[in-house]
Structure formats: structure tokens, C-alpha cells
Amino acid sequence: MADININSIWEDLSNQIKNCSKCILCKTRKNVVIGEGRRENCKLVIIGEGPGETEDEQGRPFVGRAGDLLTRFLNDARIPRDSIYITNIVKCRPPENRDPAKDETLACSDFLESQLLLLRPSLVITLGNPATKWFLGTSQGITRVRGNWVDWRGIQLMPTFHPSYILRQKIASEYNNLVALVRKDFASARMKLDALK
Ligand code: URA
Image (cartoon, rainbow, N blue to C red; front, side, top):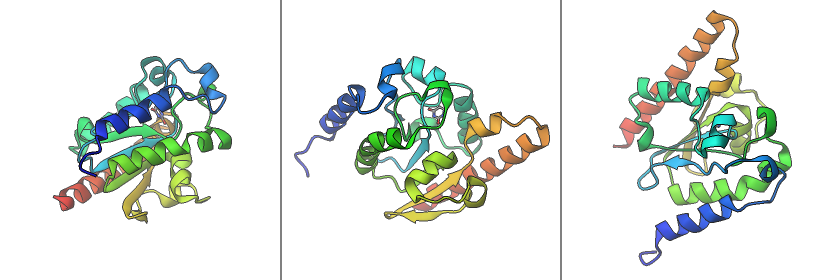
């Protein structure tokens, strides 16, 4: 393993993702959103669904309104955004922010598998149903499974609510309840990170 250059593997993978045309999302994307953050000694990976409009424009994950809320959760839990890696199950924007279709998720799956193999995180947080389903194959909704740590191939994984779902809440008390639950989940991730040290 010593003479394998990890940076060149990342570069190869990034080029494959950038040039991918395995599903129809490549026809409408402006930019591919590969992911960003810490790659070496990365303890935590956060996985969303797919790029939204701002992410598609900038080629970066979670930089729109949902990203602002995610960054707030990270800050509240004292988890620096640049200390983790953030990506999505699909790397191109589904039009109108619809959920990624099964064939689109499948077409992108090898990329996420490769990213996880290279990152080898201790912890994963999945945001929302599609990302959680990718890992756990569960049909149980996010409300049931959120906040629970489970083992996924030796990685500790916890689902929580997607920030976009929280932002769609129209009733203040519901919004506040979800924010409180996600803050709790990120505090739990902070404790897990501390325990790894
Ligand atoms: N929602 C996601 O699931 N991913 C992003 O990168 C942005 C919004």
C-alpha cells in the first residue's frame, strides 16, 4: 500500500465522476458535485441526497439554504466543517429537487462506495430518507430511525433529518422540534468523535 499515491487515486475518481454520463442527470446538470472536505484521517462523513440549485451552480455540496442550516448544526456541535467530508448519494442535481430515481442512485453508487473506501471514516451521518435507504435498505421512515447509531460494515452510522425537510416546515413549533432533535443528534456525533480520540 505504501507506494500507492492516494492523491492520484482521488484524482482519477474525481475525473470519472466529473465525466460521468451513466444516467440522465448528466444532461441537465451545470456542475457535478463530487463532495468536499477532509480526506486524510477523516473521522466523519455526512451524506445528503443530491445537489440542489445552488450546489449545481457552484459545484459544491450543501452551500445553499440547507447547507447554511447544516453548517449551523455543525457549529453548534463544535464540529468544524473542514474537519469532515460532505457528499451526496447522487452527484448531479435531480431537476426540480425531486428525489433521485432508483436507476440514478444505482448509477452513482460505485462513486460513493469508492469515496467511502478511500475515506475510511469511523462515523457516517445520513441526512433524510434516500441517503439512509442507500445504506440500510430500510423502508422505515427517518422519524423512526433517526438518532440511532447502527453498524454499517464496521462504520457507526446515524440517520437524522435532512435540513431541507426542516426548512419546509411551515409551523414554527414543528420546525423548532426538528431543529432540537437534529442538534441532539449532532451533539451525539460530537460525543462519538471525542470518544475516538
Ligand atoms: N441537499 C442535499 O441533499 N445535498 C446538497 O448538497 C444540498 C442540498
